[in-house]
Length: 345
Ligand SMILES: NC(=O)c1ccc[n+]([C@@H]2O[C@H](COP(=O)([O-])OP(=O)(O)OC[C@H]3O[C@@H](n4cnc5c(N)ncnc54)[C@H](O)[C@@H]3O)[C@@H](O)[C@H]2O)c1
Ligand SMILES: [Zn+2]
Image (cartoon, rainbow, N blue to C red):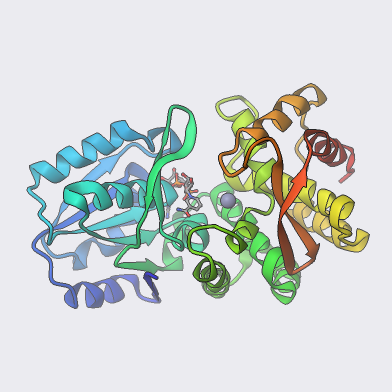
């Protein structure tokens, strides 16, 4: 498992970390936003280094950008003893880590996640890769960074919708693993949370799950709570005027799947009501046109995590406890989205 460093003084802590490392050359990968907003926080302490910038956004998490990164690595003559720093959100970490892991059969890299989503989710678990031919994370590897260095200092420049998007994963961590955590989140205004504490708690939950099941053979599937329906909603509206951020779609997915939990495995009505109230107060209510529901439900079947024709969902037994591999039909998915649509805020 990678070593995770929770930093309170990012420049000082990174400086100290790099001094413990022997490397021939240092490279830094960032997208243009994190280059502008985050690089200045560490620039001064970085020893001599090369840097690579790419255009921000999921649309650039692809092999074309990888080719540019590999070309840059080659031009810089990085060798097996070089070290790469990936400074950015999940797109930078997944793609920079993938490029480092494949260049010359793998060179070392350090991830410095700068979005809440990448700090609480993408930073743990060793999944790296890029999108391909319209499929998310289709090409990739499992590999661990040398270290993940997490600082809430980066969140100050993160646009609020991006912060809220990451917060959906935080709520998910409470729902699937820790009832007290969920209730403590619920009792605070989300915008003024103590991010450092939240990141540490959420990372510890994700880590616990991943350590028990690194290759997603069983338990790790609980991290997909809200994602069967959520991913389908996200994919369906990708590139349209209804475009949703990942966490916004997952918030819808968590309500739909809490409903399925109630239908299929006896999750309580009270639990369902609490989840609805909490998520709507943070994410608001999205109108999903009823003519889209069938096509969205169909998309669930294309998720690579499903075997054959059944949709295996991770559903809640109660708040803080999640079960996985529960078969759900396409009709159930449509019903769950219909249910979402009928909720009044
Ligand atoms: N590897 C995993 O286990 C895992 C888990 C979850 C998500 N992911 C992946 O992560 C990606 C999503 O991550 P994301 O939401 O971090 O997206 P992202 O990397 O695209 O970042 C979101 C936006 O915020 C900007 N940004 C990032 N940090 C900033 C900062 N501190 N200040 C100002 N702007 C900043 C970025 O430039 C970008 O425009 C997806 O590709 C997803 O597949 C991977
Ligand atoms: Zn997610």
